[in-house]
Length: 82
View (cartoon, rainbow, N blue to C red):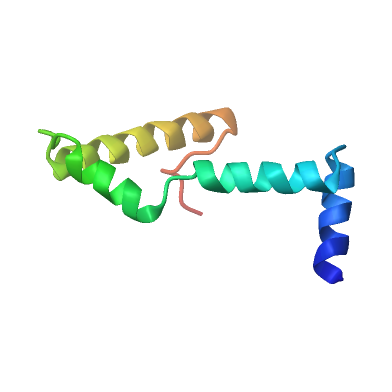
């Protein structure tokens, strides 16, 4: 009964009947791509010509820029040591 009660509460909080709530859950589950399907889709995609090192460098630079913006916004200075 715990499961049924939990489903009833969730259905009520979504403003739908329990039957409709269950149908919605099933529909969402059926529409999800499985891990195996996702892996197969990734295998079929053309390979990128960008080296992983280039991606890593771009991410590092973007993070450094974002850190600098936050430091400036909050008046922090990474160069000052106590």
